[in-house]
Image (cartoon, rainbow, N blue to C red; front, side, top):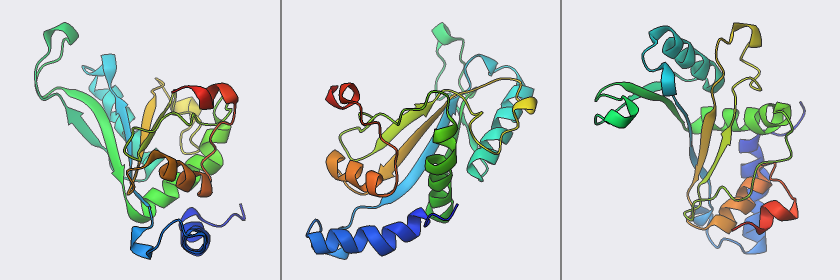
Length: 189
């Protein structure tokens, strides 16, 4: 793909454009993506160590970084969870890996997702962070569908340095986020 990388696009195009348009008065006030958190819940495979290892391996392939297995902080009898039991797998990406993952996500993975019409513009949390979910890991190029014993969903959170959702959405749009444009999606509040 001949597209300019997201990091270079941000530095060479977005920052100068926002400075000349007067959206930011100082380059240090320029909003940026600070980190990306990729998370998945283990669910009913918490007793199966082989499946957890496969999940950790696949998450590592997807993100390019070794994931952390999150453990339960307290016991909850209703969910058959004891303190210290694995409940999820999480990766926090920063720097070059963050931009690489974002490029891969926007350019290859999301378009390969079944019935993809764009990501919902309603995933902002009121503090400039955007979260959305993927129902399975199969659209990622690193995953071989023949070796997948069980499909799992992912939650992706993009954390920005701004506290304003509209600025964060504008920034992500400039960086290539494929937001859906249907009126129904945009009108939900």
